[in-house]
View 1 (tube, rainbow, N blue to C red):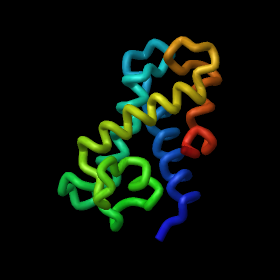
View 2: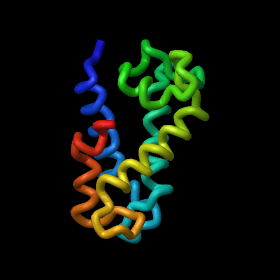
View 3: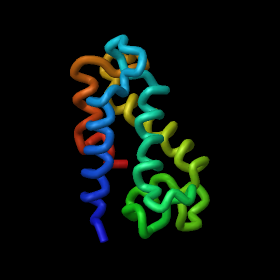
Length: 120
């Protein structure tokens, strides 16, 4: 079983790679709330190994389940992950949006790829 640190590293790596791979979908040099949520939403598809539409403890670290399992039934549905993705985007902006423009740009983007931004 992976540790909480492993989950943080996995989420950090996933998000960092997603940002590097084009989270700035409109190419304006800023990553908006919607773009951040989309990055976090991709985690569900990556974790749902058997593609049955839910992420279980066999597919994900307990830390992810703790963050995303809204009804605490031990599985994360796509709808629950959408809520998690929105909340994660909100946390990312609260933690990393230094200039308060409701988007990440420049050095603020580096903040989101650090493990500190996922310690919720």
